[in-house]
Length: 314
Image (cartoon, rainbow, N blue to C red):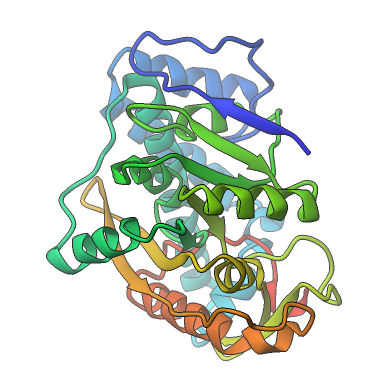
């Protein structure tokens, strides 16, 4: 079990360790070009270059195939040309989110606007729980930049995710604006949950992704839920942690609108304490609530759902 600590890297900051190979936003050369443009504050040029890079990749059949299952379900009546346009817009939005992530890390500027009163109230209630808070989000909208906004909680923040040293881009967004975040490596599923539970017992914040299984569909750590007219399997770890620790569970979705990231939906999800952990089926109703909330966001923002594989056949 590894714990990795990323430190804030505002304008002019550098990483302490040797920089790993980038595998986001295309090749190393492409990544380097975008980084130079961002450091030179040529953001308009960067976004223009991005549009052409995405167009090139969207023309490749194997790239479009990665989002084909989602396009089929979200736009079932689309013809061949419309499917191409949908795929392009989806990948373009994804590229813009990744570019925002780089901008946040390189310049120290986080593209947030004010959240509404209901969202702020959810954050206040969740932050007041002495047993900690679980923030459950998904690969929807600007989730990566949104994670960096969790430092508005006045307590340490832990992000549970698979640590991939080859992804240079992760060095740019996984940090708070005023202090480092703890990254709990999910490569060890059991160990990461033990560490997350310990953090919650200390009254800290733990952020989890709730829409993607690690491993096969037959894994016993997930349940099937209805999503976009089919069944997908999603993990139950967040609901189990909430039941075990008594932590507040907050569903949080962020979207990118007009060049800024805003919290589109924040909602408390109440999970009773003491549910039997060995019977994952008891967590299915709560997982379905999460899937229903995620579907509502996707219906309103169809080009901000970034799971590029067939979730319905896994």
